[in-house]
Length: 400
Ligand SMILES: Nc1ncnc2c1ncn2[C@@H]1O[C@H](COP(=O)(O)OP(=O)(O)OP(=O)(O)O)[C@@H](O)[C@H]1O
Image (cartoon, rainbow, N blue to C red; front, side):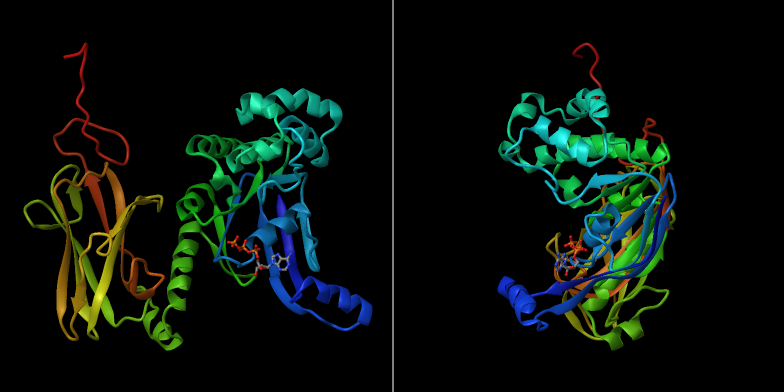
């Protein structure tokens, strides 16, 4: 269990290092204060994962450092039932002149393992890294992915009850990231508490039970990961429009400046009949009706299809597809994403649509609507398949 009560952390910012010295000598305040974390409280029970999301500089890494004791909070308390380890900024606590194996021993000692525990676990830690003979080479010869392998292996084998994961995980290759994810799941299933920081929203949705949206050190939203991720998207979009636009625009029907509205999103089957059920592999259209409250040129319309877990299954937009969208005031227009073969696997899905300028909604969000249509994909008379996408392999037996 991780329990955090009202923690705050303020940094002193100096224009130059010499200002720090002058402050001591002349006893004059030469710094500005910066609140990196403000009055933050949360608990992560055993067997649960909390996701921390937010923009660059929101305070996520500072929170992890406060949890792991690298930083001490100015006010408030952090209580961990047992040991906390994790993957923080790459290379923290490692000596680059030492070999991989020596770094394992030093790091494990620092994490509280006795010499006999280290001896007992050393082979397991080394074997998990899959670094082969490199384990005897100095760390300065390692790539960032290799350092990450070492750091993760020591941290997860140090018998923690709580674990923190920062973006450092993303420097690993796809194979090792999956291996780490599997280990993190096992840790969680064994009753461990995890705090996970990532800019990868799909990873947050898959791994986390709850999430917090941090903004300038303050938790502005807490709840189910999908809700918090939608709030994050809204938060980013809000920065791109004026406050008045936002006040007028944010409602149950999405948010944005609303000069152009997404009026409806409908699905059509291969016979152009409106439907909520599509047959996998058959043609289908997603029709988005826009209404111009004002005339706007060169807009981008994007869609994201999400599965029942809220994971992004597919997303595209007119910018990537190299089409310009001009909308006139008072006019409606239909934009159609037409699929020759709708190759999703059987299951329930939702569509999020957004109209904005530039390549992404971060530039200027005009209207964003989460879950504006829901539908189901079912199998037709083609052979059964499992999974999210319909691939169409040919099967050759004995070279036929
Ligand atoms: N040691 C420090 N001294 C002064 N300011 C600091 C220190 N560490 C962090 N900060 C500041 O605190 C704020 C929060 O930083 P932090 O690294 O926690 O953000 P973050 O949400 O993890 O960002 P990112 O997504 O970019 O990793 C930033 O403005 C950063 O400049």
